[in-house]
Amino acid sequence: MSINTRSPRSGRIKIALFVAAVCIVIPILIYTHRLVTQLQAKQSETAGLYARSLEYIANSPATGTDYTFIFDEIIGSIDFPVILTDGTDREVITTKNVEIDTAWTPQERTERLQELIRRMDAENRPIRVTFQDTIVLNHVHYGESPLIAQLRWLPVVEFAIGALFILVGYIGFSYIKRSEQSNIWVGMARETAHQLGTPLTSMMGWIELLKHQAGNDPKVLETVSEFENDARRLTKVAERFSKIGSKPDLKEEELTELLRRTVRYFERRLPQMGKKVDITVRSAGPVTAAVNAELFEWVVENLVKNALDAMEEGTGSIAVDISGDRSRTVIDVTDTGKGIDPAYRKDIFRPGFSTKKRGWGLGLSLSKRIIETYHRGKLTVHRSAVGEGTTFRIVLRGR
Image 1 (spheres, rainbow, N blue to C red):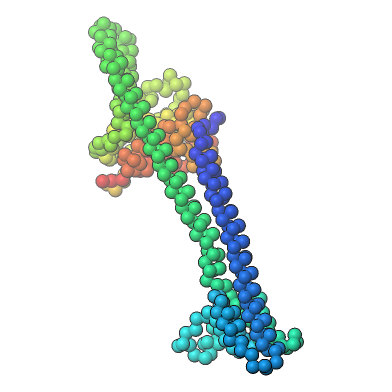
Image 2 (image 1 turned 180 degrees about the vertical axis):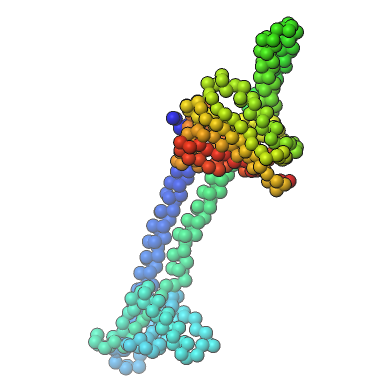
């Protein structure tokens, strides 16, 4: 078994975008952390200066010195919340940059300030104001300034903006890439249909000539008939390719007979494929749904071929079960093949993915697109077990 995953370029692009984001964000985080640390140190220095000033006044003799200028310069420069308490922290003496609601009762004011003090002490160790280095007169409790609080959120904001920028860039790149790939596939499909048109028209003319030349020879007529069936099938394939990229017309079709025609084509060719597989179409009665017959047959053919490839021993069975009502139609294609390894199940519909030695890995991806984009339905792996088989389920919604 070989795993064909095609080009890993998209994976490398994701890694490159992630590395670029990390290279952008980490220096910003380091710089912002250093800046916050420097501001915190400056803030602690200012709070310490405030405490030392109080301590100096408490320890100085009463000489009638005017300390108004000192307090105006020191206290005026404080832009962070400060609470000055007594030595036991039971009484709040003064506050700075602390919001106090005048509607609070004295008890509420005390409780709220005590809670704020506990939060401040968790951020910064309170500074003691002592008398003669022995008696604790006051404690200076202080918190973070609004600038530091905003700087703490700055890395998060920068990371979010960077991630959003990278996400938008990646989505835009992916959309452009998918659009280009889609245009390439549409162009190739239509060019293939155009190139097949001329030889097929000529081939049908040669078939008609062979019919006249065969006379009544049954063996030759049978061979010509099979030749004609294959030529018509090639014509149908060309018509399918020509419809890629354009919105197909959906018509009410009786699905049971449509699927039986598809199955009969495979049944006649099973001996040539060296397989002994029983293919059945089961339905409780006529089931109709709005489909494009040619594209829908293509989906079923892909699922049947996938089921045949899963039977590596060349024997088994494939059951196509049809059921539905006015609200929805369900088609289950069940095989008794090797099943899908759980490690690959999430990739089974990815373009280019294949577990076969030969193949481009486009059949299931194309089938899913036909069902979900053109028929507004769903194509999923309903059930699969290694060694037991797989069930693919098509769900078509009613109009």
